[in-house]
Length: 127
Image (cartoon, rainbow, N blue to C red; front, side, top):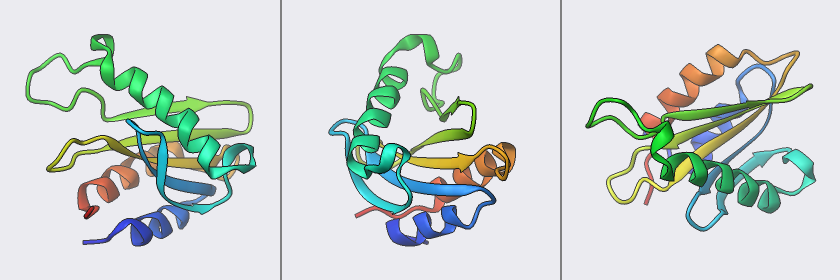
């Protein structure tokens, strides 16, 4: 079972990966980072991504229709040259962390990244 560093390095092996981070969405702090940061600063990127994650996680509009499922699995934001994939990590404590993967649009495979990030999140060991 991989820890934070191993998980982020595995994410960087995905086609088109530019950068990855594990972020606590309640505090906006990056718990680990690798590669480039969108905008050039990992801490700013973590805080901004945390705002988006918090918005989705705390509002019922985005909740699963069936009880017992996680409120949000992931978020995908696309722009002209890249994708941002935020994958929520289910933990035994408060489940307030997510993986943020930044992919180049031309080289990246969004479907593959979503599947692999879900697998990584399921195996991630925190603590």
